[in-house]
Image (tube, rainbow, N blue to C red; front, side):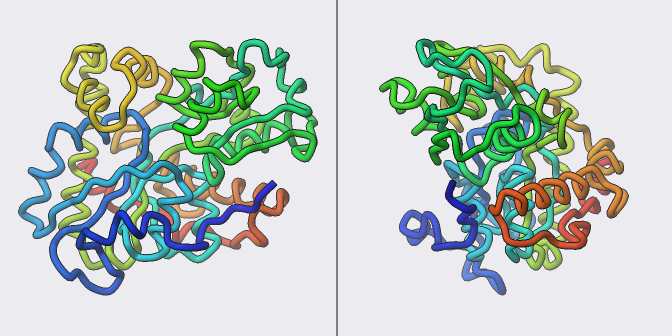
Length: 343
C-alpha cells in the first residue's frame, strides 16, 4: 500500500501555467480557478447553466472552472495556493487538513451512500468481499472510495489489505483497465461506476460500510485566507448552491435524460444522460438548512462533518496513511456561509 501523497509535488502545474491563478496572498488578475470532479449533482448543473458566472460577475472575479481527475490532485493544488476552492471527499479533506492545508469545508455536495460501490468484474471469481484476497482492485487513492475499501477490509470483512493488490487508479483509468480485463474489481463512483456495472456486480457499497463506521460525503472546501478576505464572493457562491439544491429538491422528477440540467452535467463531466439520472438517484443532497445544522456543518465539534473528519483521521493513522491525527478538526469546518444562504 502506498501512503497518501497529498502534498508531494504540484499537480497539474503545466496545465495551469497559462492561466492567471490565485497565489495565496493576492490576485494578479481577477480570474480564479475552482476545481471540480466527475461528481453529479446540482453543483455541476449550476456551473453548466451559467448561474454561477452570472451571480459572481459583480464580485470582481471570473471563475475558470477546472476539472480534476482525483482528490489527490485537488489537495495538492489547494496546498500550493493555485486553487482556492475545490471539490474533495471527506477522507481526502481529513488527510489534507491533518497535513497542514489551511482550508475550510463550507458545503456538503452529497451524502455518498450507494453511489460509491465495490464492483466485481464478470469472470473474476469474486462473489463476495472475502474473495478479494489475491485479486487486483482499482481505486482512486486519497478518496472516500479508498477509505471505505480499507474500512471494509479492516472492520467489516476481516481482510488484511496486504493480501489484496490495491492499485491507485483515477476513474477513467479504472474504466480502461476494466475493459482490458486488467483488474478484477474496483471501488469507484459514477460515471465510471455506471460503466463498469455493465459487466460487473455490486458486492458492497458505502451505505453498507458507512453504517459500520462513518458515512462519507463529497464537499466543497475553500482556502481559509481567501474565504476571510472575500466574503462577498463566498456568500454569492454559496447562495447559488443553496438555490440550485432547492431547485433540485423541488423538481428532481423533471431531471430526466433529456432535461437541460442532466444534459449540462453530461457536458461538464461526460457519461451518458441515463447514467447521470441513475447516479443522481443514489445520492442525497442536503438543503442549505440541513447544511447549517449540526447534522452537517453547524454545532462546532459536535457537527457531523467534524465527527467524520475525526473518525476518518483516526482510521488513516491506524492504516499508516497519515502519521498523526489532530486533536480538533472543528477549525476546518465553516457553517457561516451555509447559514447565511439558508436565510
